[in-house]
Amino acid sequence: MKSREEILSIIDSMIGPQRHVYYRLEGGDPESGFSNCEDWFRYLFRLREIEIAADLHEVRKDFKLVEGPAQFMDAVVFRGDIAERRHVGIMLDARWFTHCNEDTNGVARDDITRPEWKFALSHMARHKAFL
Image (cartoon, rainbow, N blue to C red):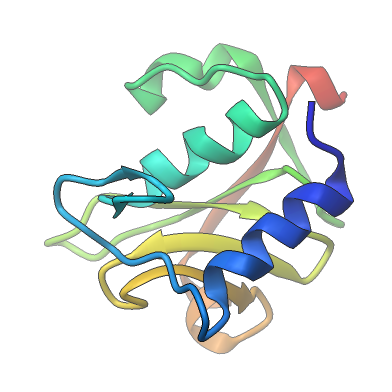
């Protein structure tokens, strides 16, 4: 199982200009890129030796809703607009989260206190392994 520090280092290596991991429609891993936020979400949980089902609706039983402050590996769920589904990311600490989507052209780190993220925030949840 990868430690918090190892996972943060992996994320940093995928975001930097030397090796950006891109959004790709047929992707599913760091080499090919990721096709959506859910693939990125599952990949990071696999690094902690936790398998997440392909259908994120099925995994609700494995997570418990949490109210602030977020901790490392908490799921953060954002509402989409009418044309979009929900968007999911993983909290890195109480302020920063990582996610992957077409708008960022791949893996990114973002500040949850930015107005657009605060507005779209639906909820946060913690996996039962971290309760």
